[in-house]
Structure formats: structure tokens, C-alpha cells
Length: 354
Ligand code: ATP
Ligand code: MG
Image 1 (cartoon, rainbow, N blue to C red):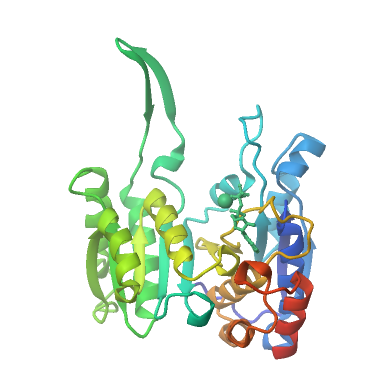
Image 2: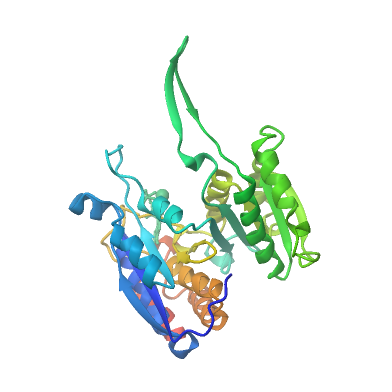
């Protein structure tokens, strides 16, 4: 996390975008306001992006949105984008573009079980640290025709620079947690050059100049990605912080989310050296859009994670504790957690705890 000095106000860009993003981001906003003087006075700036924005204006990520985030905001909360089922000329995902433009190179996804009675596996308390800028997501694909028909290829880029900075963030996080355990995820038995570089670079972080033994207390393990998924389901308690290249991190964090019940609970942040953006892990959930039953807890937890990253530990703790209490009490839960409450009833329950 980076230092935020003493702020009078906290300027938060809000980009609900599409689908249930428009229902859950306002809930996160209300929860932040309820923190009162535990954080600098929040000021919200409403910004647009997404599929609906594209269909209305022809642009998925307006230049204005990016500029205001860069120039005026301390941080941001992003909802979710709908994606067209087929490729549409001129449209590409604004969240992928935002990560690039703001250099948000880390995607951090904590997965914690707080209510085993709601079908969550007990003792899951882990964080997936996913590299956010390269790997197969450079999206360089070609289609050619070979002697036996079409041949499709994709470029997978792994750099020392990106692996080092994601490694540093992962060590920093691991060092801040009670268990101080870091698992490096790769597949270097098959991809010895790309995954080999990732593995070697992350492993070398503790001996970088200036670290001076700071990470001596962190234990380091490695797992091939396939066996990591297996062990995640068999014995999730062995994991604390996991660091992975982009694609493995994407898959692992969705798999980890399945261990604790609902996507509607899992928060994330996209973090760089100068900016942090909270984002629930779930998508736009078109099947429940507009029904008022989207679970707002992933977004409230994303706000907590964003505040924690900015150094506002007290505010972050209060949000997390309130959410945990609401889940444990199980009186006000949305249908994804087998409850019958609406988004606003769950929000009200959180606000009462706050
Ligand atoms: P997208 O393409 O935008 O990701 P999707 O169809 O994959 O859309 P997701 O948002 O990823 O949908 O959700 C997957 C499933 O989980 C859906 O059935 C959805 O209703 C459910 N879900 C996701 N988020 C929530 C939430 N916050 N509250 C309740 N249910 C949710
Ligand atoms: Mg989805």
C-alpha cells in the first residue's frame, strides 16, 4: 500500500457501469459515508463507462472518465460491465483498458470463509495476488491457415519488470499477515522460459537491494497451477497469500470464490503504485439485473479493501466487521446466500452494524 499523507477529503470516483453494478456501487457508497470521521470526508465523483455507455455514445471508456480519475480522484470503485455475446467492432472492455491506463498492475482478491453454516468451507483465509497487465492478456492473437487447416496462436508475455513488482506486492502483503506464507503459482515444468522467469523473479524479491531482510519472516512455497487448484479444494487452509501470472490468477481466484459460497461476497482491488480501484469480483449478473436482489457485500468489502490499501485501517476494519456480522447472523441475506432479503435490506443491516 502507498502512503496517503494527511488528507482533508477523500475523492472517490464511482463507476457503476452496467448491470448490477448500478445496484451495488450505491450500497458501497452509503457504507463509506456511514464511516463518518474514521476516514477523511468522502467526496464522490460519478463517472461513466461500459457497454451501455458504448451503445449510447459509441465509446466504452470516455477520455473524460480516465482524465478525472487521474487528475482528481484518490481512488475509485468500479461496478461491472456487461459484455456483448458476440464481438462488436469498436468495443473492448473498459475495465481492461482502465487497468492499463492507470497502470493498476495487481489484482488482489481475498477469499475468507466467515459462515460455514451457509455452505462455506471452514478455514479459508487466503489472498490471490494476480498479475494484471500481461501473460495471455496482451491479447495478441493470430489466425493463419496451415497445411491441415486453421492455426490460431496467442502470445504470452512475461517480463522481469512486471513479475518483480507483483512479487514485491505479494511479499509485502504476506509480511503484513499473521501467517506470513507466500505460495508462488506457476507451470514451469512445461513453460520453463515464461513461467520460469516469473518464478525466478518472484523468488529473488527478498534479496533485492534495499529489502534488507524485511521479508526474512515470510515462508515461500511453490505449487504448479494444476496441483494448486486440487489442493485449494482439498485443503484450502494451507494457503495464505498466492501470487500468480494473470491467467492462472484469474482461474484460481474464481475457484477460490466457489469455496465460500457466492461470487456476491468476493471483493477485489486493482492496485498500482499511484492508484487503487475497488471492484467486486462478480460480473454484471444479467440474470438478476433490475430485480433489487443483488448481493451488495462484495462491493462493500471492495470499499474496505480499497480503504485498507490507502492506509485507512480503522475504516476498513469497521466495514469488514459489519459485513461479517451480517453474514453470521444470517437474518438479512440476499437469495444467492439462501436468504430472502433485498439489496437495500442487506445494506440497511450493514449500516445498523456500523
Ligand atoms: P458477466 O459476463 O458480466 O460476468 P455473468 O453472466 O458471467 O456476467 P456473473 O456476474 O459473473 O454473471 O455472475 C455469475 C452468477 O452469479 C450469476 O448467476 C449471478 O446472478 C450470480 N451473482 C453474481 N454476482 C452476484 C451478486 N452480487 N449477488 C447475487 N448473485 C450474484
Ligand atoms: Mg462472469
